[in-house]
Amino acid sequence: MRPTKQKGEMDMTTSDEELERLDTKIRSLAQAFLAAGRPYLLSRLGKDLGDDLKLVKFGYGRTLGDYVAERLAAEYSVILMGQHKNVQAIVPNNGSALGIGQSVTPEGMRGPRYNYRFWAAFSVPLIEGSRWLNLDDFTFKDVREKPDGNYIEIKSDLVAHEDAEDRDALIKSNISKWLDSEGLSQERFIAKPQVGDGKESAIPIGRTLLEAVIQALDRKQLSATTLSLDVVADLLRRRL
Image (tube, one colour):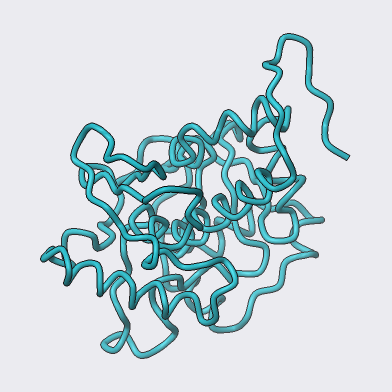
């Protein structure tokens, strides 16, 4: 049952098809970001959703945190971070999101891990028209005509379908084709080490990511979370 809109909210009809598309977009963005092994701040997710954030607030009638907790609960948990536990973020329930853009292989044989927004441009299903990637911040728009600004087109056949087999491998292949066709360097789109923004740094530096995740989850969430040994090992190696 869809939530009832609160008084004063926009009258904005959101179909089940639109909500499913929004689920897919959030899922793709989350998988790409969480591959770095860090919680995905809801404030960052809201910015990455762009205009689609309106569908959450006005079409669905809930906050972004409520939306994720209600519609994507099987895959993600919404946790509270920071010294005062007032910063919301999402983490995977089972670690399956870790590793997007790089397979579990020896370090020297791993493929590149791309910027999560850039990866999402090839993994979020196309709405309509063409996909246009902003080369300044790697956000994208699905429109027929080129938007104003530093945008470059990603042909529709290079955007992976939601039900495509072996999607990660397909996305990597599509990215390689696109880079070759546009004459662009791969290095430009590789994920860079992120500097804390003050909110995330409330977790003491030097602790493992596994410790931070365990502390962030409550007893119920911990009992419902299963991690494979290779993911546990990876989380133990990563420090905040």
